[in-house]
Amino acid sequence: MRIFVGARRVDAVPPDDRSLAYGDGLFETMRVHRGDIPWWDAHWARLADGAARLGLALPDAPQARAESQALLAGGDDGVLKLLVTRGSGGRGYAPPDAPTPTWLLSRHPSPAAAPGGLHLHWCETRLAEQPLLAGLKHCNRLEQVLARREAVAAGADEGLMRDIAGDVVSATSANLFVLQGGTWHTPPVDRCGVAGVCRAHLLAALQAREARLAPDDVERADAVFLCNAVRGILAVVGVGARAFAPHPAVDDARRILARLHPAFPTETP
Amino acid sequence: MRIFVGARRVDAVPPDDRSLAYGDGLFETMRVHRGDIPWWDAHWARLADGAARLGLALPDAPQARAESQALLAGGDDGVLKLLVTRGSGGRGYAPPDAPTPTWLLSRHPSPAAAPGGLHLHWCETRLAEQPLLAGLKHCNRLEQVLARREAVAAGADEGLMRDIAGDVVSATSANLFVLQGGTWHTPPVDRCGVAGVCRAHLLAALQAREARLAPDDVERADAVFLCNAVRGILAVVGVGARAFAPHPAVDDARRILARLHPAFPTETP
Image 1 (cartoon, chains in turn cyan, red):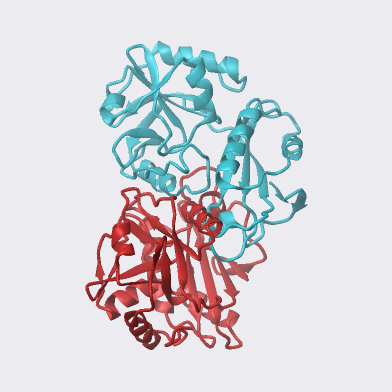
Image 2 (image 1 turned 135 degrees about the vertical axis):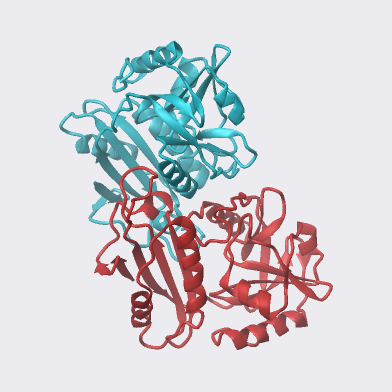
């Protein structure tokens, strides 16, 4: 773990940090391949978009990249997390006029594979509709915490979340793709949800379409997978009571993804 | 500032804190009067309710009270903030099975009085509807940060927030009371908003009623005030384009509040 306030490395996060107080920050979790971060540019672009929308200052981009590479020296695979907060602030919601960002880099092991495919639970916790925050990977994540707790309690691998209107949005930490009539569909993230970096790559590469999906649409689909930038494509073998058999279109999608990011396996792991 | 992990005082917040990462925490801001916290029990009750709903562990109550009093030794007036997080956690939303709370106590000066009354801005930032979090003083506060920024940019003292449906809920850091037909009304906080400790005291003491309010209801009211547990009752002299003259019912409310908490002045400051 390396912690910075502006350009300066520090030993600890200042206790008046605004992400600690208000979740006033953004984060990225990135898959590392042989000491490199193939999708760095896409992650940084999403971070910059979030910073612009929230009015946060970003760390110096070359420094952030260099420190990331330094932390990954050794060349292993794994996961890099970058958390950027609005920095220190006084009591009260008003952001400081000229904030200095606090940022944290941490390295984590690659997640375990899910060779048997995932069983998904329909979470009762809904995603609230907030267009001003939709798409961002911000640090207000209590809904995901509550939903994930539900999925764990149900003995499922992940949980599917609906919005207040009842439309399906995503899993707690992954986007959702469903195969309908030979075309992959994924829910829009304009009212809530996260605009995943892997989702964006797959939308283009699979010629997928954004579509609002009801729970029935998911359960009646020909195939379902989850995806994120850390784990790639995760086959789904069950959604609630519905079982899904292996489908060649998921293998096709995995092969296409493997060409876009060398850390993700071509074959079902 | 004093920082604790469980019962143990520490020098810094662990960098893997879940409120830093996800806003996975709760807080209370309390008005201090001559070294005492008259509403401690009400604040602790709300904190305990929030902890139960989110599944957070609380600090030991006698220790938290004793440490608060120790921090306030000297007998001045001011503000005490208590922030309780779910504590350290790994990467990912799933809460740890047996979390140890991290908690921070900080002392702040009493806020400046607002002798002329407040001018309020109608914020464009809406409060999303999330019944599972409504009422709680949790650490997912990006909506309030964005709304407060709007109010500052508009040159207003505070901002009024509506929910997605258009109903008025509260200011960014205070509850709202409006006088209609001789009765005080305040919006419910069942879909969003914070169940303020001062609000609860005033609901009972003023025989006020909860009612959903449209923006027109606020602008056509006979009188309007904001309240919170740090500043007490704050008279409002303008909402958008509508000006409000001083109203004796606000002075009556302030006298009633002064009997409930000795730090709040009887007279308009």
